Amino acid sequence: MNLITHVICVLTNFQGTIFDDTTYELESNSDAINIEVNIGVLNRALRSAWGSTHTQLRLTKKDKIPLLALTVLASEWTEGNMALATNHNADGFGDDSISEAPADTTGDRGPRERQTWITQEIPIKILHESAIEGLHEPHCPDPEVHIILPNLAQLKSISDRFTKLASTDSKSRQPGVMAPEAPGMHAVAFSGSGANTTATALSTNSSPKLELSANMHGSLRLAIATDELRIASVWSGLINPPLDPAQMSQEQMSQLPSELNRKREASEGFDSGWAKVRIDGKDWSRVLSIGRLSPKVVACFVNEMALVLYVYLPSNRDGEESCLTVSGLCPNIAFL
Image (cartoon, rainbow, N blue to C red; front, side, top):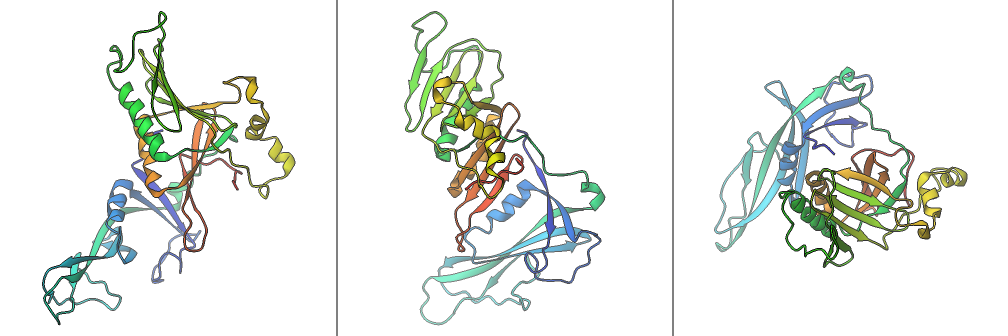
């Protein structure tokens, strides 16, 4: 995985759904706006909207520079009365970056709620159709394994521990590893609920990247190797979600690599039917930070090629789950 700093967003069918104001002119044949935005800047702006009661996003220009203007209404409690007067447009938004709405000045001089309009301008780049015509969603083979990941907080904690161990000097022994019971090999158990973790000393030329593998019998394995140490943690009893039969016929489904692996007997051997990928530990840790939203994450493994994560966010008011795709897209795959 490579760290992504910019993302290109294509807005289609946005009239009446994303932007209320229709006073714009499109120089596009596809009724789409192609935007390039810095993820770090966008993330900082969106954080300012946390806990706000009202948010507005506008596509605008300032000194001929295209911008996304994010305006939020923030509230806080202060001592005494607020007697500040402001002039706002009819829609409640002024030209100033920060302005304050007056609070009720009658009654005692106790705590008062102060409302502040905060506008953050996000520089963007508008891309012409010709600039993105060669861009498309990545295609990859059908996954050999798809599995629901365990608790993301626990997975992140163990992943970070493994990455930290691998970042130390590969020539020095890792703390906590006892003397080998046999020449060249020994094992040490780490405590942790839901996972069985062992460390085995061996010689390997593998680069210190996380190895993530899974099978269609509910098992997930996280490992990392250095010249001095190989550590692995295994989860069992996880769920391999069934595919949606509405997406393809039963005959087509039965020929998918994942379904063929599902039919494999676990007795064929520990390494039978496993799919493995290698990922950068720091990038993986950033991806797992989405665990704060308590999502359900389905990981799709294309052996030695790709890892695709479908992140199902908690149900909204309509009872429907929102789904994000991380790291790519496996075509023609849907889950129940």
